[in-house]
Length: 112
Length: 114
Image 1 (cartoon, rainbow over the protein chains, first blue to last red):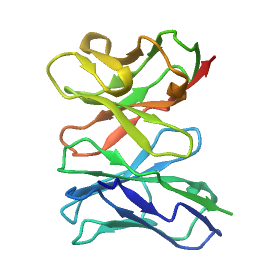
Image 2 (image 1 turned 60 degrees about the horizontal axis):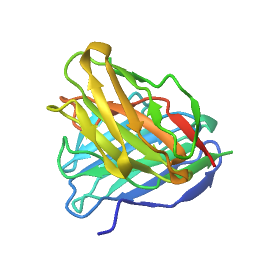
Image 3 (image 1 turned 30 degrees about the vertical axis):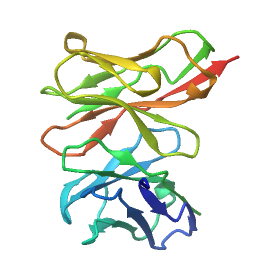
Image 4 (image 1 turned 120 degrees about the horizontal axis):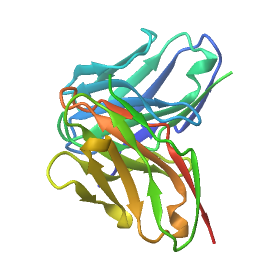
C-alpha cells in the first residue's frame, strides 16, 4: 500500500505570496493532520481534520488554513508568506481520530 | 498544557554499544506517548507507542521504551546500535481528548561511530 504522499516535495516562494500544499492519506485513513517543522526543532501541530471536519487547531495565525476533501485528501494554505514560514510541512494520516499517525516525507517550503 | 523535554540534543555512540535516549513529559492525566525516528530529508516513522498496560513497550528495529509515571519519563533504549540507527529521534505526547494532536520534544540527534 502507498504511504502518505505529499506534493510538491520542494517549493520556493517570495514573501507575501500564497502557497498550497497537498496531501493524500493512506487508503482507508479518515484523519489528516498537518505539522510544521522548523529546522532544528520538533514538529508543531497546525491542524487536524477528521471526516472532513476540523477537529483541532494549533497556535498558528489565521494566515494558515486547511480543508479536507470527500476522498480524505487535504490541502494546507498559507497566505501572506513570511520568512519565518520557511519549514518542512508534514502531513500525517490515521485510520480514526485517536489512532497513531503515519507521516509523509513532507514539503520543504523556502520563503525568500 | 502538555510539554515534552528531550535533554540531550546530540548523542554519539559506537556501533554495537547500547543507546538510551531520555524523554520527560508534562501532562495532567495518563498520556499517550510515542517515539518517532526521522532520517535526513524524510518524514517521521513510528518506533513505538504507549497507551496503557505494560509499562515496557517493544517497538520496531529492536527499540524498547519504559513508561515511568513517578518520573514522568518515557526513555528509549536499544541494546546494540547499528550504523543505520543514525538519525534524529523525537518523543511525543498525545492528548487523549484531542485526537491526533501531538506535542513533540526538540529531538535528539544520534551519531554512530564505526
